[in-house]
Length: 120
Image 1 (cartoon, rainbow, N blue to C red):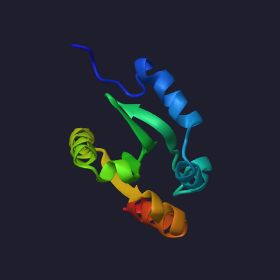
Image 2: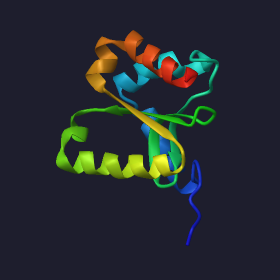
Image 3: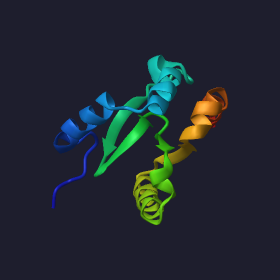
Image 4: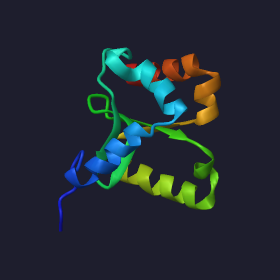
């Protein structure tokens, strides 16, 4: 059985493609997270843990941040997100989720919530 790793080489091309094709919402939140702007913590975009690619991840805080569009509101999307959250939480990684429109309409509130979680 193959060991699960962070940033698995087999997912490198997919991670790179996701960074290139990032959404406006991802780019907006990245502007708030990059360069250690939140609690002097380093965040990564499209970071993989095991078989899952996370939108954003902070290893020191063990925090995954996921942005959700309409595909996450389907039965399949909800089930997949739950499976993924269970896996990540089994690795002691906290998962927080934001709807895309929340990021678009309240980026400062989203950034403040991330900061509060990182400080706790």
